[in-house]
Length: 162
Image (tube, rainbow, N blue to C red; front, side):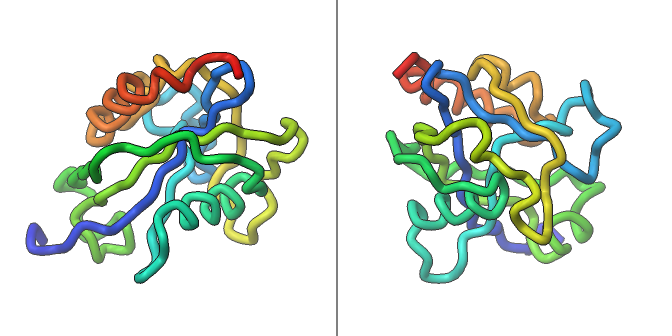
């Protein structure tokens, strides 16, 4: 199983005009209101040959119903995580050992009413809210926590009112 590849992925730290970031609750964990891992940032797979910046906008549209955002910045490098042993062969379709992710900071240009979690037939989230960027590490599942800590640190310059 450790010979499995990492899945290419993009992630979005979507900031509103108040400098708060959008977090969403996974639809497959609705009972996990306060549980670590039930809430996360929008993210998704990168198709072969797809531009990462275009992919992050596509993922926003698929997961939250809008791509009404502008890219503010991106991480300098790809960030990787490995799945814990009990999820190998199960999570990510059983085909990957984890993910390699390019993270983007984006400014949301729309209104809250533009966010529609039911816009895609395969609804990933069932609730969302704006949160302080500093909250990210606390909401992350343990194997993703180092990435969320890095995002909270490196994207803090975007967590300001626009």
